[in-house]
Length: 295
Image (cartoon, rainbow, N blue to C red; front, side, top):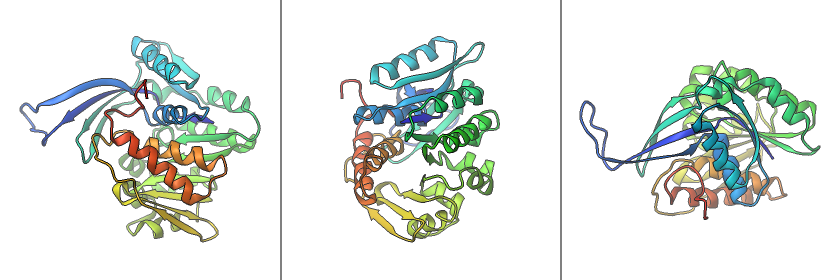
């Protein structure tokens, strides 16, 4: 599987209580690899699925560290190094219930459409592209995201897209985003992103609405489980796996990896949803967005 999107440094700030503006808030702070696409690729590798990441980093120590971490995790390397640019970084403010991200996209915005197209052109026939929505949501990287979709269509790859994040999705415009991803095989979104793309409503009606634009749509509801709708009108739902939540960072990326790994090897939607829920549950029980190196 080829995963296209972002590779960044996560600065994970784990705080027990509310942020106290203008003063001090106690927290545990850790630095690790992040980025939606990179996280999904790492979880795919953790689950025994071959994954190659297409992303851009700066020619700096952070970029070298991030690439080395993925190599150690078993992720294939199709990383573009951008001289003179800084590797992207994200401050993640996280507690047990929610996380907020403060983002410097850095080299992610410089992902080259030609680089993306070359990787996808060389892919084996019958392969799959998983595109993080982030490249589409920012003007600098949008040509690369759209080039990925075009190349996948031209060379016969199946395609899944993760809607990425509600606020930049709203900024880019729901109508434009749905036009860019029209007729892809699968669109994944969480409840907030579904509100942007489909309007308010229950998850089943939102997922069904989105099948007017894509072949299959999955709406994730966190602890409320997930719903899958197909263009032929069929729908399925699955509960979340009940576990103690330590850190929700990367849970959606792990869910996507579990679901895709199952679905692309022949699982029906209910089983693919269950596989996504299982990997998502594993993610929320550990700190950070990636599998632990030993696990």
